Length: 123
Image (cartoon, rainbow, N blue to C red; front, side, top):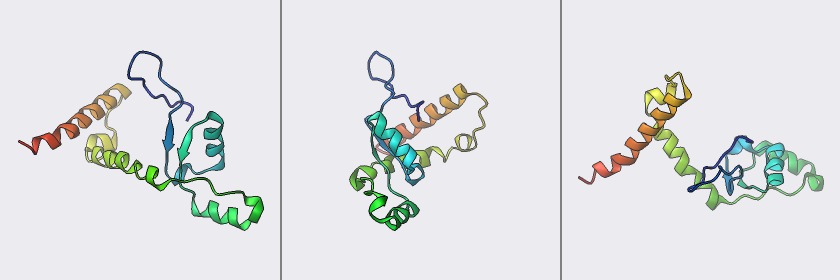
C-alpha cells in the first residue's frame, strides 16, 4: 500500500495519499486499518464475520465496530464491473504479454475500445 501513487491532473509529482480508499473484506485487518488511520486516509472497508464475532466475544474489551458507509461502498461496483469487462479479453485475463509496458498498452487499448463501444450503439 505504500506504493500507491495517484497522478495529478496538472504538473507536479503524484500524490501518495488518496482522498478515500474503498476495499473489500480481504483488506479488513487491524493492521491495514491502523496504517490507513496513521496516514490520515479515510476508508470504507466492510468487517469480516469472523472479526465481528471475535470482537463481540471479547465484550467491552473488543472495542467499537469500525465505521462503514454502505452508500460509499456501492461506488466500488463501478470499478469491479470495469475489471469484469476487461477480463473478457483473453490476453488480459491470462497475461500473455511479457513486459509491463506491453501489458499496459494492451490494457489501454482494451479500455479505449470499451469506452468507444457504447457510442457505436447510437449510430
